[in-house]
Length: 283
Image 1 (tube, rainbow, N blue to C red):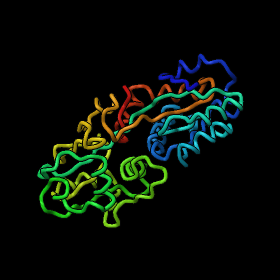
Image 2: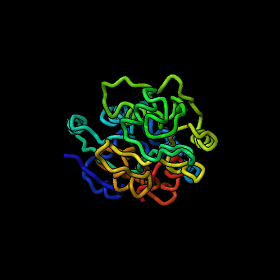
Image 3: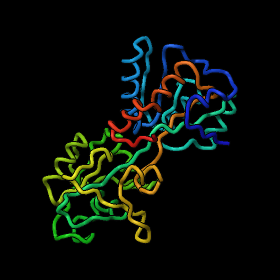
């Protein structure tokens, strides 16, 4: 049975042995590529405040993090998905109980110029636009103008998330890719700047970058569903389609430096870092 726990100090109440590979002054954190930048930002700030402690954060994917947690080669697994039942079973076979801690939310805004008359799109339309199947704004209710597709670069976790959940619609067998003509930009700010000055452009970035210089598009799961604006409240309520929770997983107890670090991520200072890195705070 999956265990849901929102605060690390509650995880400490769970009976069991402490993670055998942990050291009092170091942590190994592995997993979700989407969460790597956030995890590293947390670790850097934590180590500034606690200079005798050391935290190593590496990616490889949520599955890699889970496998590392199960095998005992990391203290914390980062995951942009819920743990699978087979992973729970594998961990229990090792004598552990995985504990799930929600640490942030991920909401991605799709933006166009305020002068663009298109203000709402379905996920299918977004998939068509960013994959290059839809090439003119007139195909989605706009003016007769070629669509300029903007994307983050391939090493961006936001790029990976958008490809998996919008272009590929969460289909693990899909091979859909961004349009060959898409402009790959190095930062969310670069996308914001380009959209501000290009009435034909469309891009995406973390909701923290939304400003009056861009118009955030309302998104619907399909034509029969309600169009939802990308707001923190809608992400928190799980209404906005391009959003998801982000998790830490630990084995059994959460104590010592592990508890101290996760308590930091859930603190006001830690949640401020969530917003600074384009994610949505849970508090």
